[in-house]
Length: 355
Ligand code: NAD
Ligand code: IPM
Ligand code: MN
Image (cartoon, helix red, strand yellow):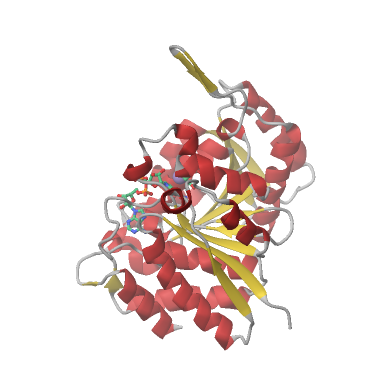
C-alpha cells in the first residue's frame, strides 16, 4: 500500500493555530479510511526567515517536492514588513511556490452555510437561500508575475501580461467546472481599458464554441464588484485573472459570513495541489486562539478531494461543520445572537467530534 505524503507548512500568524485543527481532522479521516500517510512539516514565510534566513528554504522546497500535496497556512506579518519587498514572505515564499509547482488554477468556493445567513453583512433576501459561487482565479501570471517590474528613481512599474495559452488553460478550468455546476460562466475583465484584457475576452469567447451548453457572460471588474453585493445569486462560476480574482474572492468570502470561511485549492495539471485558506495571517487576532479554523479545515478537505480523490471525505467534513453550526457554536468572526462563542481549538474539537 503506497504512503500518501503531505507537506504541512503552517507559516505565520494564525497559520499554526488553524493548521493544528486541520491536522486533527485530517488524521482522524485518514485513520478511519485506513490510509497510510505521512505529514512532513516545514517552515515557510516569516518563521522561515527567522529560523533559516530565507522565506522558502531549500529544505522546505525539498519537502514539497517529495510530497503529493501541500497544506499551507498563511504567511506574512508586521514583523517582516520592514524587509526589502523581494525578501518578504508573500513574495519570497508563496508566489515562488505557486510558480515552481505550476499552480495556475486557483479555485475559491464561496458557499454559504444556511446557519450563517445572519453572520453575513448582506440582508438575507439579498443573499438568497443557497448562495454557492466558485471563483476560478488565474494564479501564476498577470500583473503579479509580469516583467518588467521595478523602480527607477521616482518611477515604479509592474506589467500586466497574459499569453493566449495562459488564458486558455485557466478558461478551460472555468468552463469545465461550470459544466459540472450550473453551466453559467461569468468572465471578469477590464477590456474597456486594458489591452491584455481585450485579448482575455477574445480567448474566452473563442473557447465558448467548445462549450455550447455553458452560458457565457462578460463583466467589467468594477461592475462585478458591485453586482456581487447587489445580487450575488446571479453568479455560478466567476473566471478572472490573478489580481481581480484576489480582490473578488475576498469580497465573495464576506457574503458567506467571514474570510475565515473561504478555502482554496491551487492546482496544476495532474493531481498536485497547494491548499490554503484564502485569507492571510490575520495579525490583528493572531496568538489569541480565536481565529476561525474552518477555511483551513475546508482547504484540507479540498486537498483530499482534488489531490487524493477522496470525495466522500470532503462531504463528511462539510457535514460535520454544518452540524457544529447547527449546535450553535461560532468563532468570533461568525458570531451572531443566541449562539455560543468558542475559540479556535474548541471549534476544531467540535468538528472532530461531529465527524
Ligand atoms: P488577512 O486576510 O490576514 O486579514 C483580514 C481580516 O480578516 C482581519 O481582520 C483578520 O482578522 C480577518 N480574518 C482572516 N482570516 C480569519 C480567520 N481565519 N478567522 C477570523 N478572522 C480572520 O489580511 P491582511 O490583514 O491584509 O494581511 C495580513 C498579512 O497576511 C499580510 O502580511 C498579508 O500579506 C498576509 N496574507 C497572506 C496570505 C497567504 O499567506 N495566503 C493571504 C492574504 C494575506
Ligand atoms: C491570497 C493572498 C496572496 C495573493 C498574497 C499574500 C501574495 O492575498 O492568496 O489571496 O495576493 O495571492
Ligand atoms: Mn488575497
